[in-house]
Length: 390
Image (cartoon, rainbow, N blue to C red; front, side, top):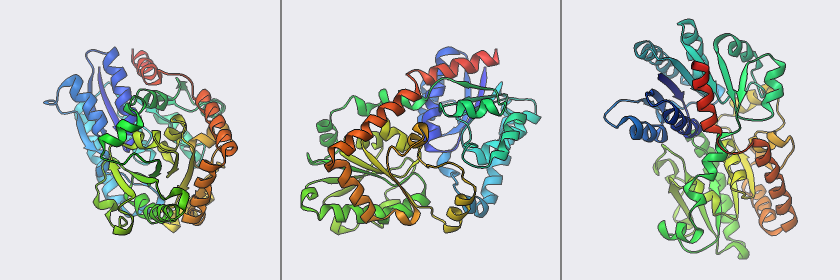
């Protein structure tokens, strides 16, 4: 069968690549064309050969986040939508599989449905958090929804949306990762780093997120380093996929160069080997839970207007998936003005120094992991999709 898959972000690339592995293992004749990233491309090339064109457009060329950002880049977004529609018609796949990325993918869902294509949506749009009006579009344009969080089950049941739940694919992505197989000593040696304790800092994957979080994170690292007990720690910034050193360089001043480093392609290893992590929400926050590393979430919107709009329409109590899963504050979230270096220093010190506090968080992590289900989610979803098509 032929598959057209659309992932618009780094997390979608990760889940798309694992889904593709499952499809290829069950459909030996699978022919996949996709929007995604390096991970999806690697799976495609391994199964179909690098001489065949699978990747249509890399997610780094079109990632847009926030209400204001969507408005400003409307022409780019609409151009990508038009190109994608034309490409789907020419490819004529058996199914169009949309992965998260609702601003773009809802437009494609409507188009594909009206043109008679089967439409699957993998990793549901967060309609339970905001913009519930999209429920109508899910009912009208999507043949089957594949959800990945247990709290979504009663939500979509109550709204009459057909769905399939097979667990969360991030569990496999973490458990089978290189980070879980490598010692901290080997990780540090491989990357030319001193054998010192690590505090992880994740600034996000988009330029806007990086530009707002890097000033706070580097000031946090300075303040922590100046505390005698932490003067021998190193602070590792996880360089986001598709970003370059130039995106971080402005804040990497000489005074912090001895103890603050940016590493690319090693996000999971950085998290896994850290004493604690400061994380910019998103998928990385849930990864940090699964790696069992105490964390604090910090988020600052690049646009004040975007933040004010979001406050009006977002209905959930938390921004982090781990907290949403257990429906309580398993770990702190500092948002917008509350996200500052002093607040992060106080919380990270508590995560490291207060053993009871740290222990309670790790106990909550066990509950989160349990609620996410066991292993094999990506394979199970791939199998369910093929069954639906048959």
